[in-house]
Length: 165
Image 1 (cartoon, rainbow, N blue to C red):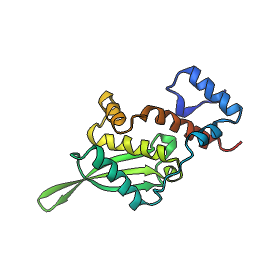
Image 2 (image 1 turned 180 degrees about the vertical axis):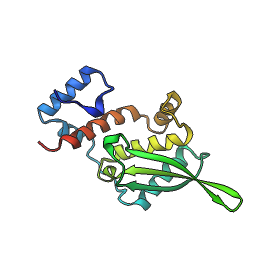
Image 3 (image 1 turned 45 degrees about the vertical axis):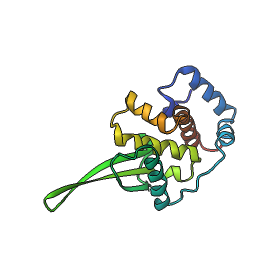
């Protein structure tokens, strides 16, 4: 029985169903049917505009973003699908803070819904640092299907890992 590392926190009956889909070679087709729409966000400039538009729509009063980019160094294996950082720099006698969001490069070719889910997750960290109830409420405010998309993203990452069969 193979370990489904992206689904370890989910109930055993869900993991069993996913294993069945993998054995029947249907997981990839199921995801392709459900998430057929690719996104057009191909470079860092487009990603910045995409993230900024979501931020302006849902988090107008939050801190401004200094940088948003795709990052080849983020390792999905270590569960880093995106990161958010606050960088403080000294400018004369003042301290200037800059916020960065980095999205794993794997999402450059992922379905549009998965990119939005990761961006929503990282934007929510601008208001809530921890993964607590308020954090997930903010995520579902920005994307009502957040939890389903998170689960399906885990299925997508599982399919990428096992590759075409």
